[in-house]
Image: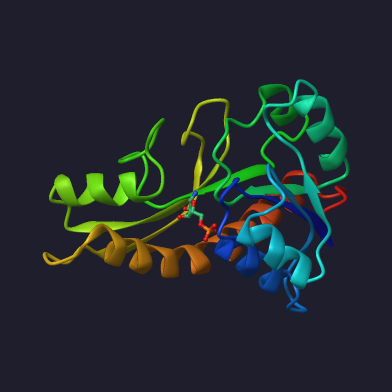
Length: 200
Ligand code: GRF
């Protein structure tokens, strides 16, 4: 059974985190969320994780020891799922988990990705560009924002009367389907890449 860590942001709402925790509680799912990492102790995501009985660790990316502390907390994890995590994942920690750090983005990458493209900025940009379609992307994390191989993309229409908030809500419903699918897919790939690996 694969061990999964979820990393949320400082204002984390935590809906993808909750979805992954729930998915991991289904008997046939190949992984379980074992810990949630957050930069601050007072977000709704941290509150939810505690209510769901998942251990939480608070680590500030501003702390000088952040990379080494993060490496210590993630030791032994098979997969790390970023869900609303806003900082750049430290390259040295990434190197210890090659192909095992995933991120979810609320647009159809490579469009509307990169630095500054987060939250409502993404949906505002999609609407301003007159896109007819949007969606979400789960991808492998690399040292560059929103790059890395795409694992799962789900799309939905953009309606002419959409506000950024309405579009965000439509995309979020897709995110909740996409993340468990991507986790399952990536764990399956890893099991085949390393048949004797611990996640098999
Ligand atoms: C999601 O829209 C995700 O795509 C982005 O941050 C948001 C997190 O939402 N990376 P939630 O905290 O999971 O509800």
